[in-house]
Image (cartoon, rainbow over all chains, first blue to last red; front, side, top):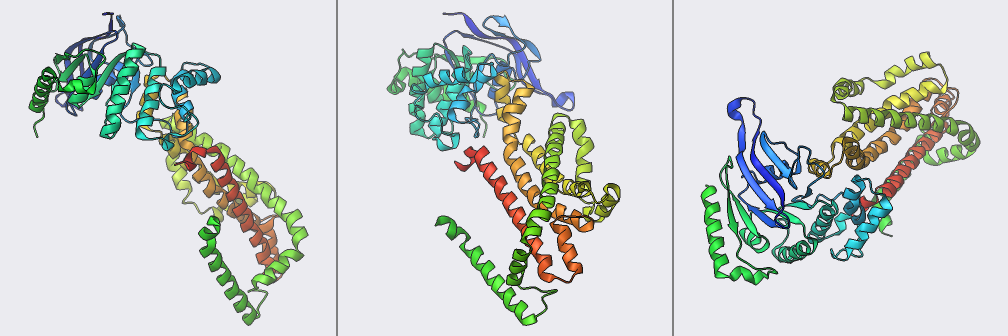
Length: 258
Length: 250
């Protein structure tokens, strides 16, 4: 179980500037290791390099120094190996729900009929049965995020990166989606790296929470969540968790200077 | 019923204008230069055979050949400009400046080059319709969402797959907007070409009637030309609705 799914070894990264002094360093010899089946959250204020980390892991960017390992292997070409669920649902408006969810299968060269069959089998679990021939514009925000998550699951990767997926949803839908996500994670035995700026959300969902410190990021502060699974939203009222939450909020507050 | 309400205002306005025209024409009594709408309709009926079976087919073939060439060349050039920025830099300024050339003034040259054959008319039609198709398709190909492009990359898509699954579907609505402009202009293009030198066609016929001081005869083929434009436009709208079903749900 403790096999490492994702490992960052002394990863450095900076955005190019016109001159050397304009280079914006984001990471400096950063180390990180995530084990198989873990649910990890990363909290940090906006502009703290969260999305850069995601771009590095998925392979959209390459590190200037250090190595990124997927399932124990150093990988330079990571595109197509990590499931990525973006902040906006990014469904294609011209594709039906069925075709949207089948997209990663199509890209793997799976025949359309076969891909549709696989999607159909999942529709019920994702609460989307009966909506397969509808278009994204006909769905609610929560439903669109479920389609987007289904698409990420169908990418077949054992590591999934979820980039603030619920930030655009209303509070009630959001809570329901968090509980639903936990159920899905427990069932599918995938590893999830979840990015959020909501401390409550991070504590409720994760095994471990990483806090992004100031730029450039050198180390990540790690917090273990002292809660058993399966969890209930009420567990957040646990005194230990409340203390932890205050601690995290203080941490983040230091970083944000209004 | 809903459609009637939508178009009622336009319909009534047209009716009022036609009535006013009819009245003015009857009072003026100059049918050779200022024919009345009913006079035109009567002339259209009298000339139906020669218009529908001799001249309409000639004009329609010019329009269709011209549009087909424009679509193939325009969409093709748009794709090339999308794929290669060198091609874009080379062609885009030429494309824009080509629109400042008064094509009507050039048309007599094409008659000299291609004679009274159909090709002098086709060239005018292509020159007029090429631009909206190319520019719209090119803009459409570029309109693909950047975040969606990156998402496709994380799914392991290659350049060709991104083009087929993102750029092309994003470009389709733009292409249809361009095509709608192009079909209406194609009628103008064909008519101009025929005016300047032809042996058949609605534009040619209209001009011939002018030399005979037959005012109603000048207008009759023009009514038909405009009907052709409207029908072509409606066909494109119908095609667009069928192919872009998702848009009507928004």
